Figure 1 (cartoon, one colour):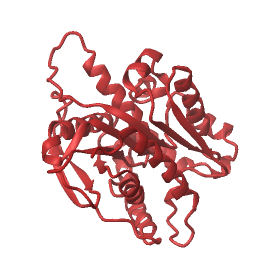
Figure 2 (cartoon, rainbow, N blue to C red; figure 1 turned 30 degrees about the vertical axis):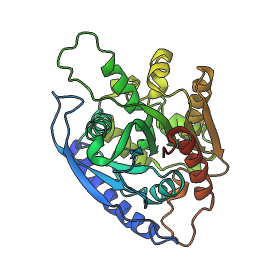
Figure 3 (cartoon, rainbow, N blue to C red; figure 1 turned 30 degrees about the horizontal axis):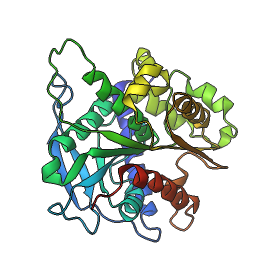
Figure 4 (tube, helix red, strand yellow; figure 1 turned 180 degrees about the vertical axis):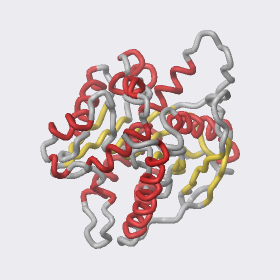
Length: 331
């Protein structure tokens, strides 16, 4: 069992390695766009009693952006990395596809990472990002009634846990320490290979995987889980494991349509992704689900710039079609 400082050292090493890998990933043609600007804000909007620190939002704007003419839908994105590594700029290729195919503003969240900031900090940061954007919609030129969430891996977990946590705050009856929340509506969710159930431990997931040799190695998954989930009792929380959420929570918190869920056949998270999609469908949610055949976790993020999986753009286009239909552009 690693101590917290040992986990921090391991995380720092992997963060630097990941940064190098994504630099190579960015060299693949066509080169992804740079973000337009960065805006910092102070956390604690959602949970005033929590820690207040500054986090960053990375904005990517469509070419025709003109807030004087109209309000734009916004896609709020959460990067992957087991809640331990990764950066808000990791998904710039996805951002490029969203800009080209939906015309929405794309905002990637630099949420705080474990082990320095374990569960539920990442979820609270995601809630704060949505509320900050809604509260400052006029400044940013966005429409808070047309918010979509997207994410990869750990970030894909946040596409479900953030609306679940936001909805639970709305439903609090005592009102104690509850700030007045700005008006917003999450109308679409696009989730790529999410982790959805921490109750099922990694060893059993790996054993049940079609190709255990293609799954993420224990050196990474052990670091991720020990960093983000130091208290095993948290693994059953619906704000960590959306698969553990009761049906009434899922019905109330998630949009009725405009949900896209994409999983990888050779990923240890494949089974829980498929099961969650089927469960949402059984609740009456309109879900577009797809398993990418013989794909590994993070298939779209290969560091080799000359060996890019062409299916990445194909899946991105399908996801953008879901977003476009849900959030639309108003004239």
